[in-house]
Amino acid sequence: MTSAAPSRISRLLAMVPYFEARPGIKLATAARDLGVTEKTLTADLNQLIVCGLPGYGPEHLIDIQFWDGYVSVQFAAGTDRPLRLTGPEANILLMALNMVLETRGAGDAGAVRSAIAKIEEAMGATYRAVTAGSDVEIPEDRPVDGVIRDAVESRHALHLTYYTASRDEVTERVVDPIRIKAVDGHSYLEAWCRSSGGTRLFRFDRVETAEALAEAAAPPADAATPVDPVDFGVLTGELPAAHIEIDLDCLWLLEYYAAEPDEELTEEWTGPITATIRYGSPQWLARFLLGFGGRVRLLSTVEGVPSLIAESARAARDRYRA
Image (cartoon, rainbow, N blue to C red; front, top):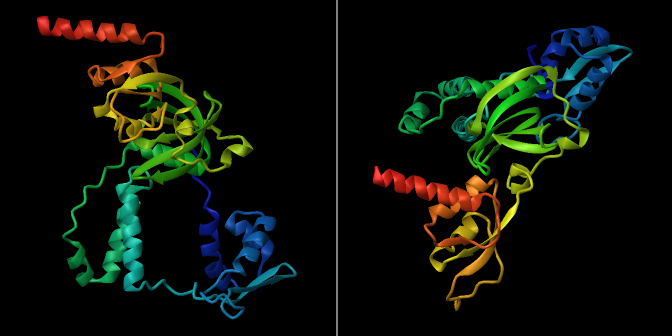
């Protein structure tokens, strides 16, 4: 696999010191050195001249002159000096880095730890003494996480073996990576799934294997629209529904499993209630019903569920007899 090209932000950050060290360089020469076209470089320079220091008046903005095919820096807006973090800035940055570190798969754990160590070193021994008492268990990076991140950066398709919790099954599929998201302490790969023909979110810790393919990722143009990670229809695809009856002592499952009651509940409600719940597979629905020991009952006809429940009951009875 070829290494990923640098992102635009990385290129922009490197440009000012590059041009400062080469005053009056030809635009064509710079484009060749930086590995971009002259059109892309011109667009980057137009972006740089509207960047600068807080205040963002004309005197605060980076001033790069480029015309007649030559480029020179007139004002670097501080980008020619090493970054000096204040105490509050360093604290905020360290908090953010630790959050990334605690979110499995969101970033290269080794690189994040290295950045944390460098910031703490720059802050001095006093700061390290204050933070030394924090003992947070950091999940170890898995090899598969690195494969996913590399595929996103290099824009290569992936072959995944993935556990779908809603269906309680492991499937194989080819996906076209779009981006990585961190949501509620979990990392998700947002990708176009060729099997389901739609954009899906794949949780890192449920990816069992990942193999980068030689072909480039090619998600449809409209698939790049960000996906809301709390949209369960996107997470699992459109799921079938079942009608169930629930005893009052199990009403908490309405919220936990996002079930929809048939009628609005009141404090005076005394008997069982009926609701609609979505499920991923008959196997999942059978296990769900068994887990409540008769306090949740299936009202609709779902092919395969009664036989699965009967089979589980027979297996349990046989184990007791043994």
